[in-house]
Length: 148
Image 1: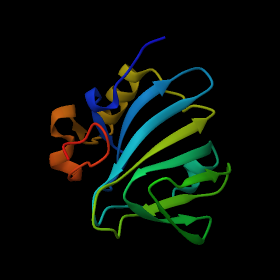
Image 2: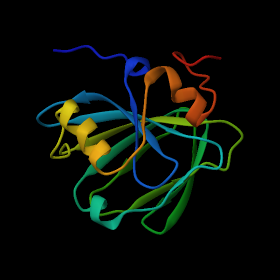
Image 3: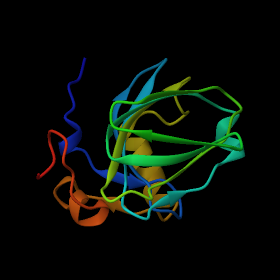
Image 4: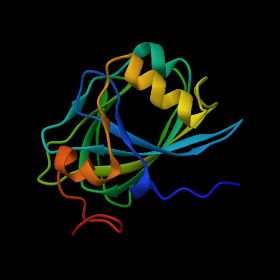
């Protein structure tokens, strides 16, 4: 078992949006990352991704407006959310601080090998942020491991 500290992991830009994720657990049956959405950040729902995964979301810090299968839900620190397979999810940070959360996938994406995942992000033209620069991209992090 390999131990990973998310503050020592690069952040990958999800798509052409303001949503960054740090892969922390990659296994045969599970994949988990810590995501950061800066103030004003947005990730639209992706129907194609929704078909692939069942998700578990746990808010670490901040607030998010979630578009979950056409329904709007607001979540904040300490809230958990189950996202069934085939339900598109989008996020918007209308709050006053960076929103951070843990997202787990079942089944894991096909490229769960972390080296392959990084190369895939680079090949798709996504921003790869070094661990020491994450806060300069997403804003201050106030939960354990952040600067505040």
